[in-house]
Image (cartoon, rainbow over all chains, first blue to last red):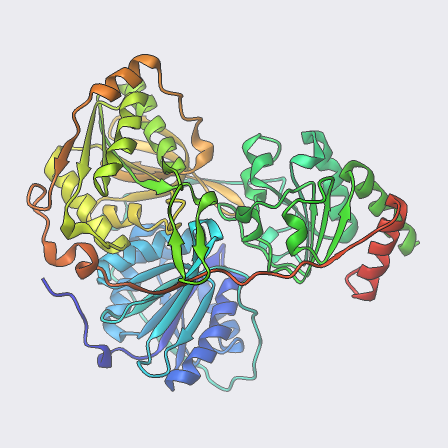
Length: 338
Length: 260
């Protein structure tokens, strides 16, 4: 069995436009912006792949605003919510028909569920959770760089003989940029969803009420670690977050201990974030936590232990007890505003 | 209920470093462990067996030393284990790995559930579970935090970014589980004795009837072309003085940066 593909027949860069409840996720815009840069090196077009029910068409313009030259609109009533089988069916058909050279997908729970399944169905290479993308100037292939071994090493991976070259890309690694874009070509595609694709059913979605501000979109995040000493002290972390208009994050240790829900976890097995300001309260800063927050613009670390690794990535470090420092910080910020 | 659990032996990733001169992994002295999420998968399989009866079979693809990982699952209570090992599997990426594991599962037995950890802590791809499901042509549910089986279907709660989602999925299917699903048991003394004595069966490419053109490095669409140490981030400024002075200084610095 030889599953290699003739590279020349595959053209263009595609970005999966992930939507939840009809709202396009920011990683989509980040990937369109990055895709546009890669497209210059390949002299090709960038396309968004927008999948949903009929109402999803209203989001087409936003994809052009962030650089899409083209949008493949895949609307079907069974595609309103993400579900593995019908999405895999629809997008695989689209890929086989229009043949993109590169396909970028956000490394979200949805993106990772979808891409892994598609890669086997299409017979193509897939690189997970990339944090860097570039085009090899000679061979014109996609170089995909990603952390491995818990962030201790970086690896660059290629898919030389298979197309599309598919990658999931970590949210918040690339910055989204709106552009003036005169393009507006929409290609409608009606997939054939089969009965057998509909055997898994979503029966309930339980929203986490403790998520007041979406972590990955927050401009400011205040995170608590073991150093806050007691689950009750997340109230203090929450108060600082609220004072700053930010979201609450958490270290893996506090999530494992049941102090706060897993939706708040920042780090390798939680979320990757890159806010303007990240305040780490009582977080030691194991590599697994650092890989999830070290690209934040400004990092403030508060920890009793002067040798805590978190200080290595901090813009400003305070050696002290966060039970004392955090409430004082809240007070001083409030004073400043009064 | 027939449950197959796929596990991976991984280096304890907190210990892995790169030699900055040669750009190669320093593996010496790094302990090998069962991928932690896979321990959760084994635990969940054992709990399902306790509730519904049946058999738990654990498989791993890897070199001969991965037998140690299989033995650990025997100690936990697995009924049968198999090492899937062949030179033809060396260098497999997730595509080839999922093909190989799916071939082994097809060959081994009938199955109701296939459980995997959500991802391995060395590669962190989360791609093998869904890959196996595709090769077997059965549905998948990823990031499971709660599983209830009733007859020929399961109700599974998934841990997503900002919400949990409950899905109903028919059996047979593949499930990948997150850490929060359970607390893996500590092997009993009796279990450890059993593991010590156990003969581990090894299955080759021929045994599982795998097409060796699509296994191992040869069958893998991806290639690792470079590994390197992540760029070190320079440390910032440590504030000094009394707590009051440090906090005041922080507030004014954040203000200068127009963050607050």
